Amino acid sequence: MLAKTFGAAVYGVNASLITIEVVVAQGLHFHLVGLPDSAVKESEQRVEASLKFFGYRMPRQKVVVNLAPADIRKEGSAYDLPIGLCVLQASEQITTTRNLEDYVIMGELALDGTLRPIKGVLPIAIEARKRGYKGFVLPIENAREASIVNQLDVIGVTTIQDAIEFFEGKKEIAPLETDTRDLFMSQINAYDVDFSHVQGQENIKRAMEIAAAGGHNVIMIGPPGAGKTMLAKRLPSILPPLTLQEALETTKIHSVAGKLGTQATLIATRPYRSPHHTISDAALVGGGSFPQPGEISLAHNGVLFLDELPEFKRSALEVMRQPLEDRKVSISRAKWAVEFPASFMLIASMNPCPCGYYNHPEKECVCGPGVVQRYLAKISGPLLDRIDLHVEVTPVSFDQMTANRPAETSEAIRERVIRAREIQTTRFATQPGIYSNAMMPSQLVKEVCLINDAGRALLKTAMERLGLSARAYDRILKVSRTIADLSASEEIRIEHLAEAIQYRSLDRENWAG
Image 1 (cartoon, rainbow, N blue to C red):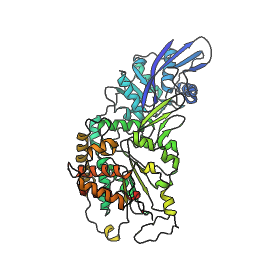
Image 2: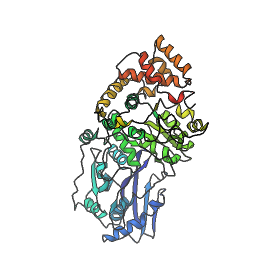
Image 3: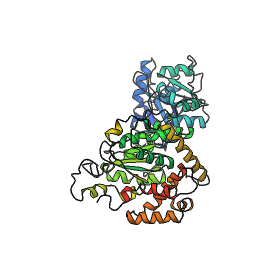
Image 4: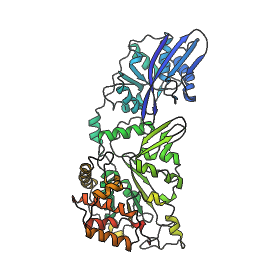
């Protein structure tokens, strides 16, 4: 007898449906075909132990399990549950009143028949609804995540026996439902940190506001303990709230990577990722033998913070250059290619020298001649070229730390950022793929960032006297356009240019002596 149901395989951040067919016929042995990996092949042992635990048996006949299409590689242990159910139906040990073919079924079996959670549930649920399936049967721990998708019956089960009784009609399991919009709106600005907790550092807060308003990348240079990490952690709290579409995109990536908790649903706040400087190239940008999203994709629609930037491997930083431009990661191998989104803001921090105290107002730098230049040279020019704001962070004085003056909240700053972003949305309405000033190509900079004669004279003087490099020119214009947007000014005035010029510390030829 033939039994058939459906599962799914996740490639990149999208799912492809897999047909699971089981035939029990004359002969011997268990045959699993359809390009399975080792974890899928081992399902025979897990399925057999699970069935025996609940009083069923693995047929002592020829059992053929086909996972179609056969030219797509199947990975992982999530096919255990559909294979087990199809084996029972094909061997006529159960009679179903609900049709297995109306459902997508996924789940890993333990030896006692309980179900363990799986990865990539959200893209599978989206694909199941798109293809018009009635429901999605899966482990109970993943049900909340799948319930984000409406118009799909999400049936969470604890054991294979629950799934059997559901399909036999002996047990009613109410589909789990989640009001996605209410959930999204209730959590949209639920950040644990706030800029009101930061005493002093008003110039750095201003730089962070400009970065958030224009989507600019930032590097902070300052001694240990100056507050660089603290400020970076608070940047997501002043970014515009995620749209529902952005929240779904972000949640899909974290679902595929297995980073969602068992009770997690929709990611409603902008992600903040802070990998350690020992991270490998593949862990940062994605890849591996089974392609997984890297840290830059997990930071999609949010912030990627790289602390102690010069300590990262040069190769890891260099492979990040292209994603910073394209806002996506393409991973290609001989037999497959996947693409992960990677639209993020890069916030980096670094000490000014190995000892950390170059240019410190009180402590003396002990680094030898040329050491500071060599330390800064660890960051390549092409990477630095993609960072718009260079901010010098100085330690907060004792008087500022103990002043207890009320500081501006993230909500107040965010309102100004949102107004500036709305101006940019209108400006780039006819430019596909461009949503903020930081995304402007050079040609568009010439059209949008117009300056008057006084502004040109100021910019020329600054580049000559400060020894600014040529790459600083476009960056200054982009940042000054953002500053003008924050002031609701249609023109880039001379004060906007003057403020933008001071955010190019590392481009000054004499910065490190």
